[in-house]
Length: 196
Image (cartoon, rainbow, N blue to C red; front, side, top):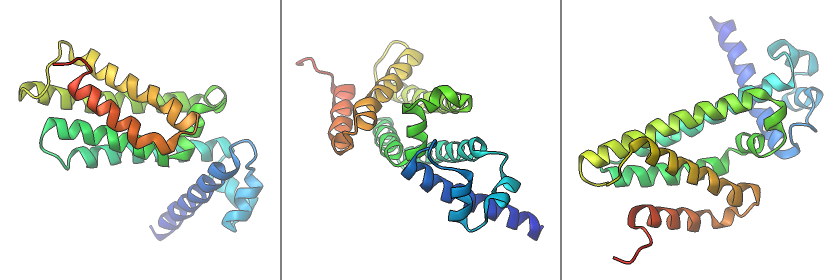
């Protein structure tokens, strides 16, 4: 049992150190040798725990995707009212995405095409987010907070807009404008742009 715990600890250390290196130098420039040196384990030890660099990167992306989901759920569960939950979801999602450098780098670069697991992870993340939004919307409609015709279409639209916001914020590196974009989107979502 102690051996198993040590094995897990070493794997976690490799993932943590590799995560920093990939974020700093990029996937292509980071080598197994670099990771071995940075962890103090050596190249051979890294190969004992992971088959290759791709497997390490996959573990990092899965960990960051899990962090995104956990942060969203935790944040949403802090509120009772559906509009507060939806606001918490949007803010937490975008702020967490900003902090998950490897997850987002993988999606915005050519890694998306060369590492097939990234697309699978992103699809899985999208499905979970869709369910969270849908649940909030259904609760909001039931309590007369929200008015919409089709819950699936509305949830898809919200998620699509948020994914669209990722481009100017993260790809074009206008991250300092994140709060303004989020607040503006929430305002439009809740109140529309037509004069009442």
